[in-house]
Amino acid sequence: MAAVRRSAHSPVREISTTVARLRRVVLDRLIRYHRRVAELSARKPLRNITSAELGAALDIDASQVRKDFAAVGLSGVTRVGYDAWEVCGAISNALGFDDPYPAVLVGVGHLGGALLNYAGFDTYGLRIVAAFDSDPEKVGQQVSGFTVQSVHGLKSFIESNEIPLVILTTPAAVAQGLADLAVVAGAKAIWNFTPARLKVPRGVLARNEFLSGGLAQIAYHLHGMRPGHNGDGARADGPPPTEVAP
Image 1 (spheres, rainbow, N blue to C red):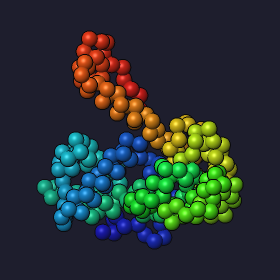
Image 2: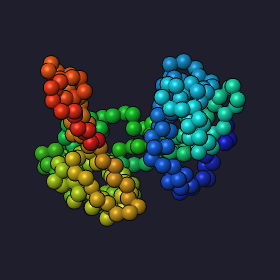
Image 3: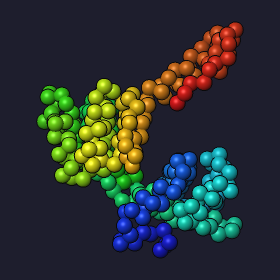
């Protein structure tokens, strides 16, 4: 087990360096492996899993699974596979899930309130510690156990508490300004749920979740299922559909 447990003296920058070496597609696959193994383990005791079993379940070639596992220091046993506990532990270690980090949320509307109430963030190390809003009627109100604070205190809160992540669920018009303020205050990542595409300096991560883009794909697909369409998004007597960008 020592191979997958990080020493208490291991600096955070060692984890960051590991993650920096992994391409985005590898990170995405590692998260899928972690989720799948965790789900299987929750259903019944799971001691081992093979790359073939995991690859078949996720439609990923078994050789790719082995390469991805090797990238985070996992090695399996022929015809036995990988220890399930070590798989989850090694991925959690490499991706930093074991290093809890605080975050603040700005914009306590319906979406913001839902995110504040979501209990699954702990699995990935995320811990929301404060909520902010610019609406005077919301400031001071209790939402999902948080007392909503004025956005005017956002910069000083980030600075004094060394908050690395800011979650934005505000109107798009104010998103860039808030992102700029957060970066100046010391935030290292912005999780953006607004339609705005944020610009941040090198060394800062902006993760844009374009919900409207996903809804557009769904609407376009369902539109193609209606009578008079050929089932692939175009009318039976019309031109082929164009791709909807994510």
